[in-house]
Length: 380
Image 1 (cartoon, rainbow, N blue to C red):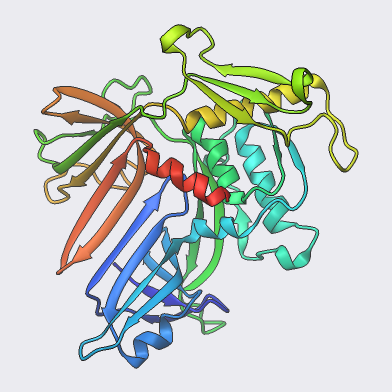
Image 2 (image 1 turned 45 degrees about the vertical axis):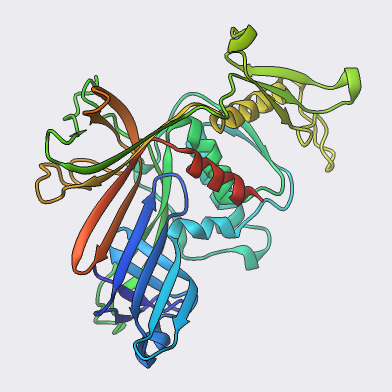
C-alpha cells in the first residue's frame, strides 16, 4: 500500500508512512468505510498523522484521520483510525424541509449540490467536492420517486435511498501528480461524487458478463462465514403520517398478500410527512401517499431476511483481478460446500489488511444487519 499523507489544509502530499506494524481498510459500497493503522511512535509520525489529514492507501481509496491513540512506553505505538472519503457526506444535515421528485440518481446528486456544492450558507460549502460528469457514474432510470427530508444526515439519506435498489456511491479521490509550474506533489485535487449501478456477474446472469464465482473448490476462498438472520423480519410496513385518531393517514406497504402467522407487521411513524409544511408549502394527498410508500419500503429494507457471507480471498491462486474483473457492489456467486448451494449476493465491502508483511483481502457478500445498524446509528 502507498500510505501517502496529504495535509488537510491544502491537500498537498506531505510525507509517506514507510514503516508500520499493521494497516487495514474497509471500502464499503453503501456507507462511509473505515481504516486503522498502527505505527511505531516517534516525533515524525506524530507530526504528519494529525487529525483531519488524508491518507492515500491505493488508487481510489483515501482515509481521513478522525482518531489518534498514542501508547507511550519503551516501544510505543500510535493507532490511527477514521473513515474513508465518503465520511465527508455525514458532515451535512438537512436544516429545513427539502422535497425531491426524480429518479434516485438525480435526487442524490441534487442533495449533494444543495447541501455541499451550492448551499445558501457559503460556510457549508466544501469547494473540492464535485459531481461526476462521466455518464457511467450518472446511471439513469425512468422510475421517479418522491422524497422529503428534515434534519436527516446526508450520508444516511443517500444510503437509505440506494439500499432497496442495490445502488452505491463514492466520493472518489482525484490525485494529480507533480506539477512543474506550481512545484506541488501529488495533490488530492478534488473528490468526485459518483453513483454506482452494480453489474450482475453471477453464474446465471443474463447480461453476458463473465461469471465471478468464489468457492473452496476453485481455491479462491480460504475462509467463509455464513449467516442467515430473520429475527427482525417484517412483511408489511404500516405507515402513519398526518392526522390524529381515526383521522390519521395510514397506508400498508410491502407484501400485503401475507396473512395469519405469515404476516409480520412493522409500524412506521411518519408524522413528519404532511400535506402542509411549516413553510406553507403544500402537496396533494397522492403525493403524500408516494412519500409514505417510499418511507415504508426503506424501513422494510431494514427488516428483511438477511443472508450475508464474509470470505477471505486467496489472492495468490485467484484467477480474477479486483477492479478489473469485478468491483465492489457487483453481484457474484458464492458456493458453500457444506450447504451444497450457490448464493448470488452483492459485494457490499472490500477490506484489505497487511499484518506481519502478509496482505489479506476480505469480501463481504450481501447486506447484513450490522450494515443496517450503522445506517440507523448515523441517522441519530
